[in-house]
Each structure stands twice: as C-alpha cells, then as structure tokens.
Image (cartoon, rainbow, N blue to C red; front, side):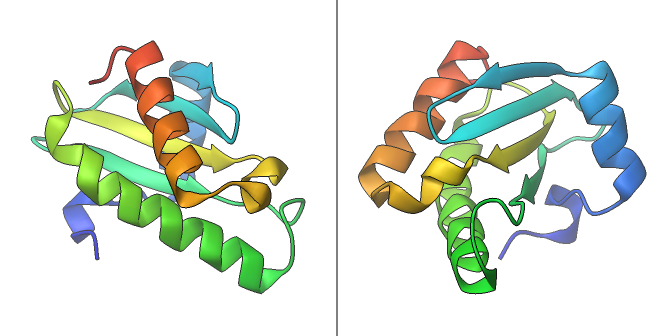
Length: 111
C-alpha cells in the first residue's frame, strides 16, 4: 500500500493537476503530471465507469498501483501524477500494461 504522503486524494489536487499539468497518452492510460512541491512523488488513480463494473475497475486500480510501486523509485524528481485508465485497459495483460506505463513515463520524461 502506498503511504499517505504518496497518494493524491483531494479533489482540488486532481483538479489542479488537470488544469496546470501536462498530459501524455498511452495505449491503456492517460498520464497527467506536474512538478511536485513535496519531497516524494504523489500519485492518484482514476478509473471511470466506462471501463466496466466495480470488479473490473478495482482490478484495474490494483494492477496500476502494483506497477506504480515498482516504477516509483526510478522517477527523476518529485512529481504529482494522475493516471487515468482508458476503457481498453480491461483487455490488456499485466505485461502490456507495464510496458505502456513505462513508455508513457519515458515519453513524459519522468524516468
């Protein structure tokens, strides 16, 4: 589980990242980011009802959180990141999702 200092939970934080941050798209995710003010990177996950019912949405969030824990130590500097899942995430394998997340982070020059 991510520490409280590494999570984005407030709606205003999500809104600020959407409004003032940058956007990079991948095959299965959309990545919104901006430089963070804290000492560690923070992340928030968004999976809409377009993805599927609750079981599928929760599975997508669990997969994204697990991948994020592996990748987070390799980030260059503290960033605030919001990861939005696209509806196509339910057809992806774990390996494809991992490659897409890495590709998207490299495209954004975060790792």
